[in-house]
Image (cartoon, rainbow, N blue to C red; front, side, top):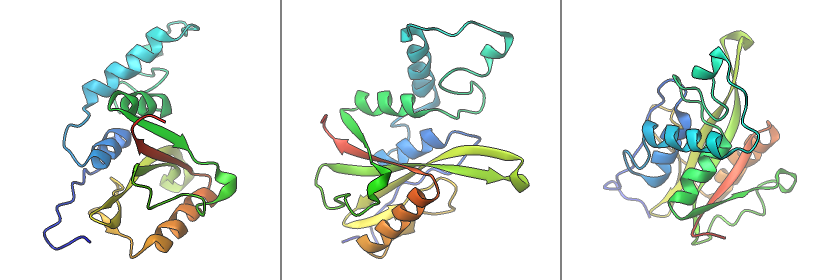
Length: 180
């Protein structure tokens, strides 16, 4: 069980680097990943793509897997980043709700969510990465948009949160220790 002495690492949102913050929050470590390391992964994905996109002047900023200035990395960057650290990702089948997720699985490192975000009266639509992680037996919402991590009181509250995410079109990704 978590105690008063439990230290929770929590990076706050900056620009659209939520995937960077989400990964560092997942690993509970500053600079587990850096902007440079994620940019390198995104660039390698472009080079490895057999159907490389043709270059346009906008290609300098808007890359296929991220935005060079603000971040906004895609799922491909997440998958490669985690595989590089010996983790695997299971995309949860949203038709099943959260009831089939084994929150007590010893190999479950954490849960990464990708949710829709609408801001400025609907003028800005985007996606946002969020990490949920169990630390010392307690589940935390480590969303980088939060001022501080939020504690879930129990597994049922985690499931209710996950079902709400699923019902609003969010994606649930289970990050597993080791490769599956």
